[in-house]
Length: 164
Image 1 (spheres, helix red, strand yellow):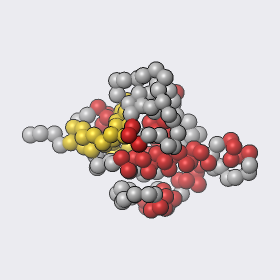
Image 2 (image 1 turned 45 degrees about the vertical axis):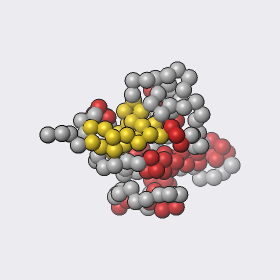
Image 3 (image 1 turned 90 degrees about the vertical axis):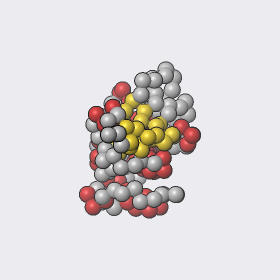
Image 4 (image 1 turned 60 degrees about the horizontal axis):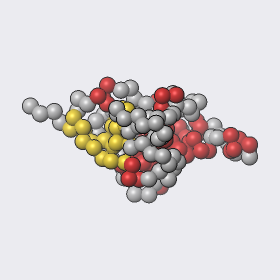
């Protein structure tokens, strides 16, 4: 009996961090359901937003490259910091949904863009100009769903927004 495959995304390390990271650094992958990624813990931010994701670092950890989206996937939703091991020299990672439903590049891009929005509007510059900067406003029911409805090229990613 063959093991069914699960569809996820490989995030490739890059030397150009930021929200406009080259989209070619995303590769859709098909992994066996017993891949090492399924031994990882759900990332805190993805749990908070009710799209439980697992992130597994691949062997390559190239010096001088970054993988900002992998870092963003590992932030703590309260202090907005990722553990040190996710901040530099991360290398390539694979990302899958914990429920083993398919994860597309568009889904993961939308999710990491939302996390980037949380990070960018909660930074010290926004505090200095007096804008509200409490990241918890992004965790309110309906906020991520609203973002997904307006996201270019989005599709229903089968998230139970009633629990967000």
